[in-house]
Length: 144
Image (cartoon, rainbow, N blue to C red; front, side, top):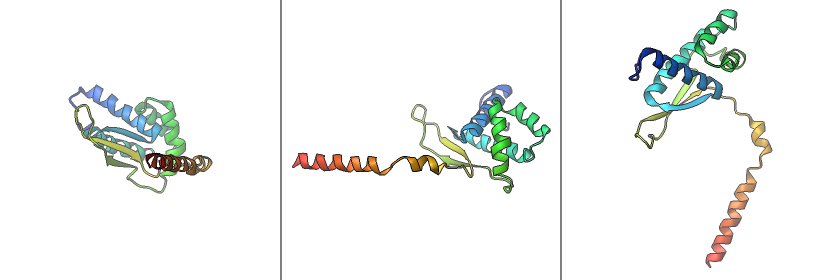
């Protein structure tokens, strides 16, 4: 860990491991800008080192992540997804500042996130828009 984040070393390492576990499980995480920058380099290093799915990789990942499901996801989902990619596994976006303390916020996401189109095919998107149009038409006729 390069940055201290005004914490002791062990607390900072656990915070970074927690963020990495959340990023692997949910494929995106929102956090403050310095934490996001540190997380991005940390997770890129982890994914680059775990390109092979052998016993040594499993043991190293078990020491990093707090959840065994994260290790399983890295080995079964992410390593096959990034076989042809040498680096650049994450991307970060600036978000609005946090309301409470005006801290700069960023979102870190894994690249090539799989969007399940089948989930969206079942939902009828046109019905809510039709309902909105009808309510707008009713509101306009009521005003007249």
